[in-house]
Amino acid sequence: MNNTKHFNVTIRVWRQEGPEEPGRMMAYKVNDVSPDMSFLEMLDLLNEDLIKKGGKPVTVESDCREGICGSCGLVVNGDVHGPDEHSTVCQLHMRRFKDGDVITVEPWRVKSFPLLKDLAVDRSALDRIMAAGGYISVNTGAAPDANSIPVNKDDAEEAMDSAACIGCGACVAACPNGAAMLFTGAKLSQFALLPQGQPERQRRVLGMLEAMDKEAFGNCSNEYECEAVCPKEVKISNIARLNREFLLANLFGKAEPAATSSHLISTPDVPEDE
Amino acid sequence: MNITFIKRIIFTSIGRKFVMAASGLLLGGFMLFHLAENLLLFKGEVAYNTWVDLLLSNPLLPLLELGLAAVFLAHIAAGTWVRIEDWLKAPSGYEARNWQGGRTIGSATMSYTAFLILVYLAYHMLTFRFVDHSIGFYQMVTSAFRSRLFVAVYVGGAAALVLHLTHGLQSAFQTLGVNHPKYTPFIKAGGWLVAVTMIGFALIPVYYLLNLDLTAATGTYQVTIQ
Image (tube, rainbow over all chains, first blue to last red; front, side):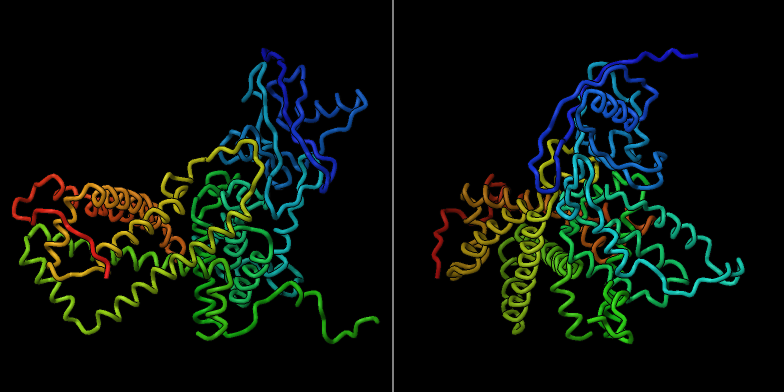
């Protein structure tokens, strides 16, 4: 049974040719929108129309379109990831809108995420935080026996909740200060809670924090906006854990220099080609 | 603890937040103590002046005062640094961005209430601390609170303080890593309770302005800065 009625909306979208080009909001009419369409499918419809008319399509990032990859991220009518709570923008559907709506679509406007084109931003700053400690150094090999490393059920659950972070950057986009503390806290917590994360625990927090501070992220002032928009409902207790880990690493850690991503790249044993 | 630790406290974002949080909690504790002291005004001249004399006779008082000033300065310095950095790094250019319920009036106005509190503190220092105390402390305070300007500054300052602490206290715990599903609601409620208690700083001057205490000193108080 198809009782859905197609409708028309106006999309006001940020257009910018490149990182250094000036950008501006442009309005487009999108006709024949089905309420069953996802928001990104509606943008596809707009792009098809733009291409048909010889225009340039709106650049927008997306991958899985099922809310688990973290590629998409738009500010829709002032709401990070759209009006639905704890959802990615690809999970937003046009049934949330009605005929004649004017919908404003903006990219993440974050200093540390330089705008590449239209709605796409460069979120590699988050990758650089990961490269500075968001890993464990082990020799992989055959899968270990399931019960060889006992993990408390509660810890496993909490680590999983932290690991749910998809790195979409909504926390930074929503933060009044543009801080990346929720991301960093979640990425740290997923290791800090598990036995596998213990050997590099102190080096990890110092390294990730150093990498975070190097980027143009602001300071966390506990506004809790990040938690309110996070599509994966990552909790601010992860930020508290990050703070705690930092304090403990300083009070009880060895006075070793903070790990940086450079120690992964530079291998002193191998002479450099000159 | 070593030099690296001190460097990390000053030159990392979390370190500066620790300074904010720890100094903030100390100042919050001091404010509670200071309010308790001031409530002695209601007990009358003898009780109040006895307490002040006891306080002044403590040889460690100048040291404590210096310590308090240092904590204030640390709080102001860390706050200013963090605020300026956040202004420079905050996301900008959004045509619209709706707050999603994390932000409160208190949290959104922290730097503004901080400035108002600083003005209040400066006024308080200039009129009560760095003045000639020969007329007696009880006389000085109760006669000053007959002045509308005084009371206006104190009510405004106390209001800013209440708003500042509604966010500040619970935020300090979060910054210091104290967050627990069971206890955080109590910490938040406790923070609010302490914040609201600061209304006391406004009630005291209003009490004297409205002449509710007939035993208090009358006449106008002349501020003479030493």
